[in-house]
Length: 252
Image 1 (tube, rainbow, N blue to C red):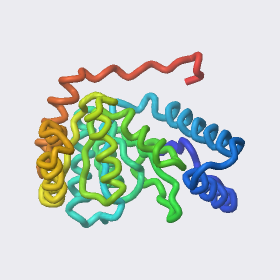
Image 2 (image 1 turned 180 degrees about the horizontal axis):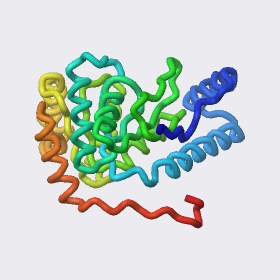
Image 3 (image 1 turned 180 degrees about the vertical axis):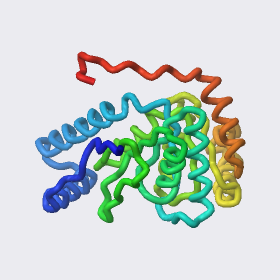
């Protein structure tokens, strides 16, 4: 049974007003009163996310395009990824939408694994896919990205567009700057990501990143190799913590 952690607003007028408010927040300074209320809304979204996701782990987050259909080879790979992650005991976390996200969540459900989505409210509404045990809606991209990273011990990145690149570079920047531990990051699709790897190597030549930064990524076409990498650099290295117990004090 799917649990809806945060339903979409029922009133379309309210939804349109919320979208305008979010745009206005990033369009420069507003009155202190408006910005104070915006901060409270953001805080509320963080708290709601923390409460909903506190007991879902340990997770591996799968990133990738929402545009690949069920008959695409990348969809099949993502489904296998989700299945194999579940078989070793991980919760599969995604952005909760269609395409690669749906495929990974579907793979988890194929073997009775735990499947979680962090969906984003967009102008062209992205609905949660049907293969989720639990999902939560976010208005703010930056809050959603915190949730996708906070609860994961590894990141698997399949082919995707600018949103996927944003998520990938958010993760490796946090690792590079030691804001989070050195969790494994796997790029699935050697041919697809070859131009990106070439671009990163040019950064090394230019001196804008260190050669050691290239070691933050594993690029592979093999799901088995990805699983071995995650086992070595997440399961064994970090000795994954036990699932925390609910707190009666917090009414959990």
